[in-house]
Amino acid sequence: MDHITNAHRTCDLILGVGDGKMTTASEGAPFRGVQYGASVANFYDDKNMAPVNDTWHARIPGMVYYGMDWLCPNFSIVLHRQLAKLHGELTVEATIQQVVPIVQTGDLHVAIYDLTSMMMSVANARGANETGPKMAYDRQFVQLNMTKLFATQPNII
Image (tube, rainbow, N blue to C red; front, top):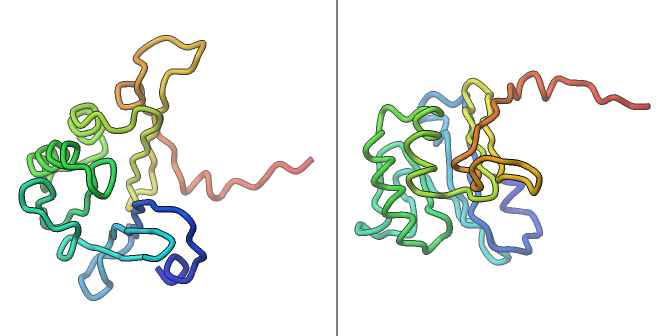
């Protein structure tokens, strides 16, 4: 968080910062959303998530979410509906099957991180010479063990 706050920021983004090892409230929020821009680096958790709007960006205990962008009501409404339905039972598999294809988020690329098990599930849009569904959210996901990948030594020739 210090690195993000003190960085020379040049573009507007929404980021997510998580730690799969945090287990108690005294350690802080295990996941935060970040409103990131040239003039701001605002951190949000499930208790102070912004923007505040009970109609299209309602809070869900233990969750921080953004539907496409900071102010994107149509995606946020659908994302909230799916996350609320799966509250307490949200898994990588449920996200792949019941969140991203319903919300239709991730047409080019989708990455789902399980920070506790250090696994990443990723799908990309159909390439020019490939067959199958066009959008990433409708394609096969590949699971990557990030612990093993981070431990891999570079192959220097």
